[in-house]
Image (cartoon, rainbow, N blue to C red):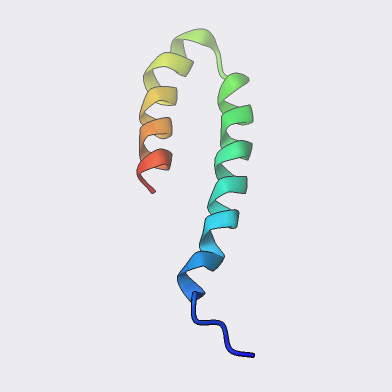
Length: 47
């Protein structure tokens, strides 16, 4: 059986990456969370 939706393989991996990164961002200091955290979140969601 041949998979025709090869581009969908990355979606679960990206979702796991975003979940992991969100837990990492919660551990950042408060000042860094708002400056760097916001930029990281927007770039992850654009991906």
